[in-house]
Length: 474
Image (cartoon, rainbow, N blue to C red):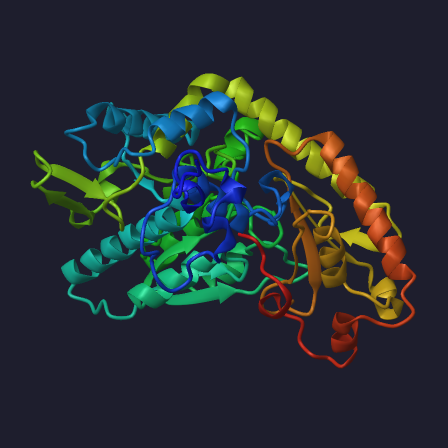
C-alpha cells in the first residue's frame, strides 16, 4: 500500500525524491507549511553550493578555519546571548579574562585586576567605540574650557577601512585624510600633524592597512605628536586601528613599540575574527586606563534579572565567539599563536618572492610586515598586455580562488593591485597550487588575440574601480 504522504516530505521521504525539491526556494513569501529539517537543510546548503570554499577565499581578512574542538565548542554555545550576564555569569567572566589577556599583550599600564575594554561585533564596532570615546573626551574638555565643540575632526590616512567613513558620517565628525603615495606608502607623521587643530579628537594610525598590508609608524607619530602637543597646548591622543596587526605584532615583533608603551596611545581596537583566529564576528577594544572610557558610554538595564551595564553599539550579541577566543588562548598559548602567525607570514613572504620573480609583476612594497601580500603589473608589461589584473582575478575564480584585484585609494587610484591574505588554514602546498594556477592563467591571458574589456577600458582612460569590477574583500 502506497503512503499518500510519502512525497510530501515526511521522515520517510528521500530528500531528492520529495515534492519540495521540485519547488524553487522562497523569495518573497514564507512557505504555507513546514518541511522536514533534512529538506530545509539541503535547500539552504544548495543555495551556497557554488560559492568559493572558505579556505580558498584569500580576499577575506576573517578566519576561515578553526579546529574541530573549537568549532564544536562554538556550535554548542550558539544559543547563548552574551548580554544575559545573570543567566550566563561565567561567560561574562570569560569575556573579562579575554580583555585582560589582550590588554597585557598590548603592554597595558593599568594595574586594576580587570582591565578596561569591551567586546565588539568585529573590529568595525571596536573602531567606533574607540572613536566615540575620543570624541566624548574632547567634547567634555571643550565644554569645561567654555569653548565651542561643534566642529570635531580626526586624522587618518587614505588607506582607512570603510568603518572610519561610517564613523565620520554617523557622528558628523570631519574625517581629514592624509594621502598615500608611492613614495609615502604609510601615514606620514608630519603630514598628519599638519591637518590637526584644536578640534582634532584623535589621530588614527593603522597596523595592517587593508589596501596594502603595511603598518603605519606609530612610534614616530607618537614622538612627533608629543612635541606638537607640547608646542600647541593641545591634548590630541592616538587611537590605533590594529584590526590586523593587533594579533601579529605582539607575537612576531614584540620589540616594536606601537601600543600602550607609547605616551599618546590611549585606545586600541582589533579584530578577534581576523588574526585572533576566531570565526566571524568578534572584535575587541581596550583603553589605557578606565579614566579614558567616558562613563556616558556605559548603559544599564534591569529587566534581565539584575542591573547590567554594557559598553557597545549593539545590545544582544553572540557568546560563542568569546568561547572561541578563550579556547584559542588556552589551546595555542603564546607559542602556538607565534607559530601560526610566523607560518602565515612565511607563506606571504614566499608568495612575495615567487610572484616578484615572474616577469609580469612587481610587489607593491619590499617589506611584508603582515601575512598580506600585494602586487601589481610592471608598468612596461601593462603598456603592451591585452589583459589586466581584473582578468587574472576572473581566471583564478574559475579555479575556486578568490584573489581580489582593486584600485588603490585616492591620489593613487590609477594603480591596480592584487592582494592575498595568508591565514591559518592556508598551507605552503596550497600556496604552490595558487602559484601554478596563476602561471597557467597568465599563459592563457598572454595568448589572447584581442584585448579584454578591462584592458579596453584602461586604454580609453575609463576609471577602473573596485566598485565597478570587484570588491576588496574586507
